[in-house]
Image (cartoon, rainbow, N blue to C red; front, side, top):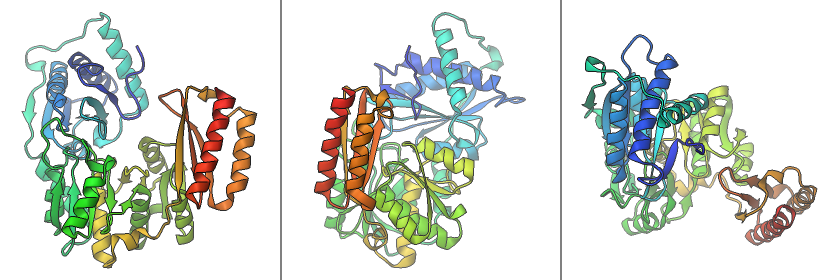
Length: 452
């Protein structure tokens, strides 16, 4: 069996890769491992379980709840809520752990299981590995130690989850949003009710699109991975700007009043300066990844803000933030983590704080985002090569060095082996898009020849 847990839980095509049997067995294994780890020592364990609106979430939720209860865990079922809501409630309700059923920005046929530790934090890698090992052990025949009678878990529908989470979001906003007209694209996902309610309570005039989930239309041509509808709606309604989430609402991208995209790097830049002004940007530092646009790095240097860069993935951003005590970090894709208010990326919270900055300054989103210039970035995936030799190929090293000399201080080259596929990603930034494309194509050819 291949490794089940990826960088963000267990994902796959629902009812093909991710079956009810797998969900049930994994939930029982999680209950046993977390009990052995002492997470629920001295008391009966409790878990918060939520999901996004995918049709498959209905049967997977039933399987997860059954597995947990059969292992003696009391379950608080919160229904359809964003991933950051489940994380928040896991902490707020002092639950021993949380479970979120979602495949985030993936297409509807996929789904996933994400486990959260006490406090709503990411589960430690060693615990995920132990859960996977125990699951496999019992899948192949070892019997479970099953509680009976009063020892089985009880299942309760926790209907206050929506209200508690929305109240938390609104309380996190430093100033009112009165006078702003904002279009929200909810991706027919988990924030379809939460986000409009929070923005409205904070004072904004809200127009919603992609806010009618039917279990089948999540991320379908809308949301943070498809900004076309949001661009059109912002212009049509004469809105100040628009906010887009993905299926589980842990991401936030935006478009300004003209419909131009404002990506995660630009959002981070705006929030970094706002937090520095408020005295909450701990260490005067923001955390990004090696894929952060060079324009973001240049802007932060100019503004006197330190930038720490990690490997690609919000898990690595979060690890750096927690280890070194930083308050703000994120990715170009719109995962923005604000540790004073959330333990994970929270798209609604990010959008609210971005809107609060617009309202507080009286400046347009386009003007605020203009603190950084996005340098043209070209990404080419080179398949079917030996990605393990990226760091050892002399031919490749020479080609990269030549490209870096050509680009100078206003360009950048990044070669990165994929974590999941037999390919190498070639990324080139330059002041001119044609130069970036030319250099990227040339390097891609060298990768094919040197590593093919």
